[in-house]
Length: 463
Ligand code: PHE
Image 1 (cartoon, protein in one colour):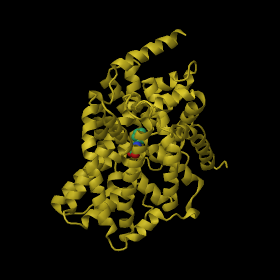
Image 2 (image 1 turned 120 degrees about the vertical axis):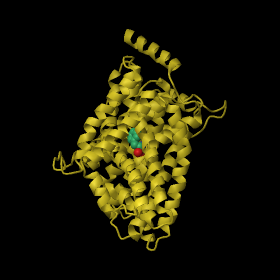
Image 3 (image 1 turned 180 degrees about the vertical axis):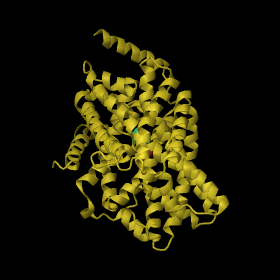
Image 4 (image 1 turned 90 degrees about the vertical axis):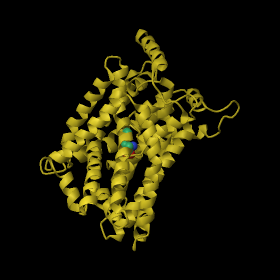
């Protein structure tokens, strides 16, 4: 009883002193900033390429809108209702059932697993900025060997990973979320324009149409249970779901933000960016006679190739990787924020200490992920996967779907329906209550958990 009251008091005090997004536009930009990242320009294309194309894309789209979107709404509403970091939010949302904080703890773990490989890839993106600049001056090329030697190296990728982590944790340490928000808000549109430029270039290459067909024409014979689970995991990874990121961001949202329309816009915008990335990469892959199943190196091998065929190509390559690097920052900041917000709000740690400690944990696992791409640890396999793939698998295919399932059950079955409706009706003028809230509720309560459950069983070969 006493702890409950103390917790409530703490919640109220924090709501007063807590930082938050200043406006609904800011909330939208930050949420989209967390969603858009390597998932769109790196993971979506390479997973689509390795899982047979169109059918995978269709399952992915289905899982974004039928499963991901309702859970995005659920996370935002739990965050805003409690105004706490993810671990405390899930620990206090159901009275006398603190064990739900396990969702927050699993999120803590996922954040570290994801960052272990995310910072490796982000390091490649940063390295490519400088490689592209060098090529612009010396007139060389960025080819398959360039990527293989970077990813498979030892000190070079580790150094980049370390720098990426230093940058991210320093920004988090200084707490300049406003600055970052503003930067991403300005640069996102430029990323979009550049992507469209790449699309135009790629789509006008001779033989490009095979790539469009590959992306949009489903061939269901290529779909396995594992691929469906991967598509579900990708939709969670894409929308930063199932691990408390969007709960934390929900806790920073102003009361005036209409949660359902905001989440819908984020899901739509994020999906458009992924499809645009696919439309830049696959037509070029087919036009140059490459294989779509190129794995994690797809982006790094194909993008410089596209640009090398256009005027001012090296300049565009540099700009493209700078913008990609910025896109990865928005996502990484939100990943680091999950453990940090808890450490800070627990009241025992200064923000910089929390940030650097989180960074150190991420780097420790990150070293394993990075070295597993080369000769040093390439042969170490756990359940048939190297560290990089293992961390990716554990987070995207295991922790995030299970986390999402738990969030849907908690919201749909344990919270009072009226409390949910009240939260979702905030931001509308009197008498203008939207009708679709009932529908969203049905999705959170029935559709999302059932679909996730079946896909998880199916992915592990149980049904
Ligand atoms: N959504 C980010 C991306 O697509 C990755 C991410 C996952 C960010 C989970 C936060 C939490 O790149």
